[in-house]
Amino acid sequence: MSTVTAKAPVFPSFEQVCQGFAGQITQLREMAPKPTLSDSVRVRRAIDTLIAETNADEAVWLESCIRCGQCTNACHYFQATGDSKYAPMRKMNLYRKVYQREIGPFRWWYKLVTSEVKLKDLEDLQELVYDSCSECGRCAMVCPMGIDTASLVHHQRSALVAAELVPPELDALRMEQKHYGTVFGASADVLRKMIDTIREKSGVDIPLDRPQAEIMVLSSAVDLMGNGNGLLATARVMNHLGVDWTICSDGFESANFGLLSGDMSLWKKQVDPIVAAAQRIGAKTLVIAECGHAYPALRWNPMLKSGALPFEMMYMSEFMGRHAKAGRLRLSPLKGKVTFHDPCKTGRRGGAFDEPRAVLKAMGTDLVEMPANKEFNWCCGGGAGIFLLERATHLRDESFKIKMQQVNMSGADTVVVSCASCRLNFEAGRQKNHWDKRVESLVELVADHLIDEKKVGSVTPIQGAAA
Image 1 (cartoon, rainbow, N blue to C red):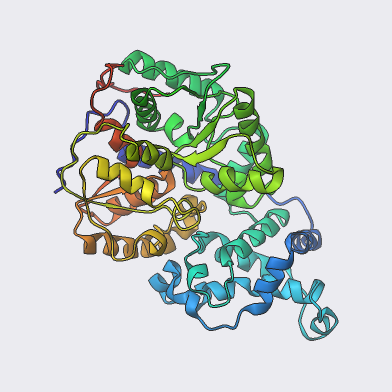
Image 2 (image 1 turned 90 degrees about the vertical axis):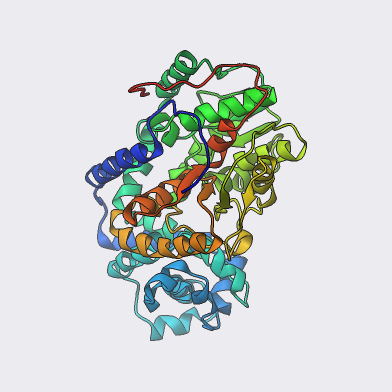
């Protein structure tokens, strides 16, 4: 058993949150929109999308695959099932066909010897680019040709958006965010109510909508509609550090279902108000909540599309890690053996490896690494929105067993994660497999071990607290 100690939670446990989300996810299938276009139009739109998104990099990747099979050794879905259809190199087949027939140098020949793309081909593609690819990037690390399969998969998700073939759970949330600006109903009013609840019940101050602040912090629907402990923990850390910070009600949601689904117009629609809010208040730093896919959605893509921004974007684990290295995070000891799970988007795709470990080191943690860690870390199996997909349950469950084995081999009692999607998937896997490990959020763990706080409010249990 773990000897990790924690203060009494203000809000329902994360286990209860997982159970609540499971019920909401089931309802999403019924809420998804139905296709409205003819089959031929849907196919043409998918093809046109792939053509539009194919530049020199994509062309080189599609041309250079030598079918060596090295990527299969790195893919958790293939390793978990042994099914060759999940080999990363096979996920490029349809894209390559479109490229060869439409814009490749020998397109005149391929139009003679290959069949046209049909709607059934796109329907079959769904499982390969949504259900069985978390875009973790592990396959790209071992590819001798340097092919970024995750990027090619994402282009194909965009094509399926155009063809009205987004999985229903993702599509329902995509349309909610597109039309209402919310995820699971997490609106600005819900944010205000949650902040009021935290202020009233815990005494912890959360500055909202300050006209100026050096640091702007994002939250997430997981906090606002379920486990408010994440937002509370973030506030306690920020107040402990004494930084000048705020949350903006017109730009607070980390989750971006445009990026997850492949709807890049929604991606921009969701990013723009966040960037505008940060610029309006003169923020020097934008701190992204523990939400893995929000990292590439906010840190990299805006700079690629709009040029360098006048503020720095960093993940919550990076922010805490910098302060830990500088000696500004004063933390009490954390007992027991702990291992850290690197989220794919912040670790392998972003390089944030040292910072979360610096935080754990500041707690005097007995940190034991998994056999494959940092850039070689295995994905939990639920990233890129897969934790939401009901039909991907078997794939997700089987691939998670690889992660369980890695943790068990480390000898750790507790797994620390810094991504809400990873945490949801870990918690679901822990319950299904009756696993004896604890799963902890990094920011919540830090908040529970802060010392020398200026008594901004002690945490006391709240019965039946909700947004």
